[in-house]
Length: 396
Image (cartoon, rainbow, N blue to C red; front, top):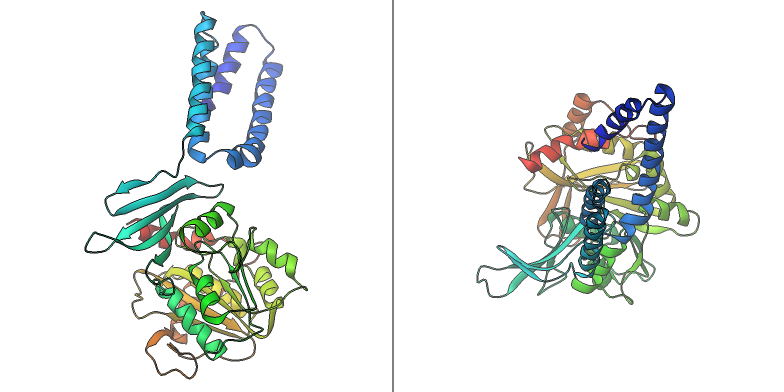
């Protein structure tokens, strides 16, 4: 807001110097517009890739302060200050942002800004406080992955266990030599690594947009740089567009939605149609999403969108889901067979514990009645508005 006062002040100053009103004001605002355009491209394509966000904000603040020093009478003082600022930035750039630090609830192994988020890796201690119990990947303050240090195949998130049970059902608990799976949204790649060790897929591809997250997964979460899941560093939709007509998968997992951020371009009917095209006959889409069922705006719209493309769609919730609290749901969508009312340990023939139960159609019908049968498209996808109740419940 402070920078917004510069244009009217400079216009007033120029007019006091007996300038022409139209020409003076027009030039000032034209220069301001040009600066905004240059700044947008400079930030998006140069500064963000080269520097972290915290450093960029500090840089802008110090440069703005330095510019004011140019109007001092003793110019040599201002130049000395600007030289000091340049030295400060050099020293800041030399600092290692991944230095280990202690926090009350664990040991921070890594923290840094990437092009997309603030990343932190932390070891959480058990009740004995002697050794770490699990390792977590935190992005923008939200835990994205939980990793059991003693048993990496132990899935700690409920939705991952539902993913595993759904996979067992779809594959009848048998490894298949030609099994091909795709995961959109990698993070620490806990579930893709589970697929790698349990099923040994012929192709196990993970698409992760943030290269720095991939580096963190390889360094801190036991993901091999070779011989494990194949990692593609790009946007999920760009990858799906690229492979259409070239590759097909038995299962596509979408693990890119959380309670703070949902990439809307991965929710639309157009993208869902592209997913359908890269599935083999009998293939299945498996997605996790978060919503508050008392509102259910996003879940309602996304289920309607999936049903506009797929013949069979089931929504599963774990035993702890509540109408009034934000909950994680897993959705299965396909064209060749319906999905079971319950998902158990051990798959289709399993008699193990119930991992998740399908939501009654009456619940989904109530969401439709309350929110309308909205279908998300590339031209209409107000995902942020639909997710607002989830965000508010998270910050309460």
